[in-house]
Picture (cartoon, rainbow, N blue to C red):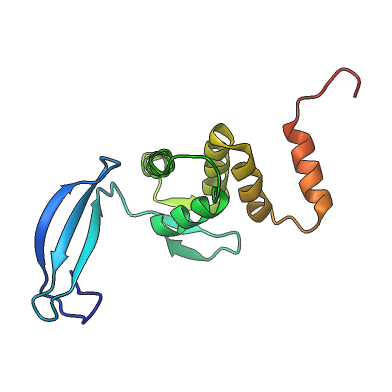
Length: 154
């Protein structure tokens, strides 16, 4: 593992243990060249996934990108970080177990929306505003209106 401080490729593992999510290994590393200490995480990857964008462009699936977008939508929400980590791991496992290596970005977005809807409606609406490319306040209003159960008076 390359040292993030000096670029040395010969770093040493000082401590390994399961991470809090129990689906990754947390490793404390030491660089003998500069004395830097840093942490890495190792996860099982069942297959290499490729994301097919709506433009047709193909790019490697990036778990960190998925995690960033979900965490942004859940910012300042009363959800435990462990629950968010479990949700992200569940989404990745679901994508990997679909049996396909090429997955459309719209399919990934739909799976994320489904997971967010079960956990937090505010995060769901936040994610949807980017995923569905809301342009005006009316877009939010229409989307939230679809979330509310219809009453007999309407």
